Amino acid sequence: MAFALSTMQLESSAFAPQGAIPTKHTGEGDDVSPALSWQGAPEGAKGFAVICHDPDAPLVQHGTYGFVHWVLYNLPGSTTSLEENTNQGTSGKNDFGKLGYGGPMPPEGHGLHQYYFWVLALDKPTDLPEGLSLPEVLKQLEPNLIGMNRLIGTYQRD
Image (cartoon, rainbow, N blue to C red; front, side, top):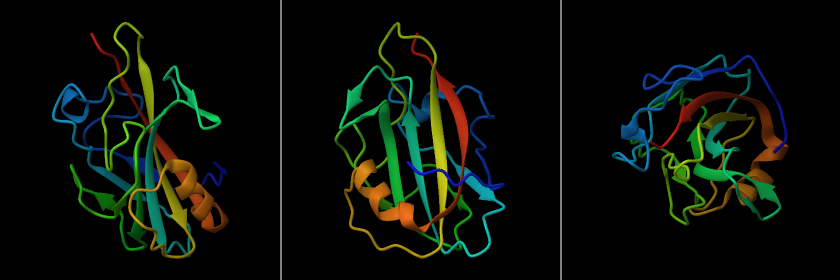
């Protein structure tokens, strides 16, 4: 993934930065996406995408590492928040092989995992088809990426 770090700030009402993600938002709970909001998008932002990735997952596939939990794109430039269990945007395919959000569920006994929620700001709106994988989405978005930032939450199975 290209990097275009910016002063954009991403937060969630469900958990604090580096805080525990509530069970409700995990594969052991209701498995619903947390509410997210962002501010300070770069000037000229005309679209957004959101990704959730677990870099601590013991998995290497498709030339990359970790586990993709959420790929969401085609969000208009006017978007500054997503409600819990959102139906906004277009869902890509996560590494569970499903569309939409798939919450944290690290292997038992694997310890604390970090979950990176990224918001990507784009200089043009997108109209990508449903069901794209993270590599497919990034290939389309990277040329138009003008800013990004992340919120990290944690989760550990008992």
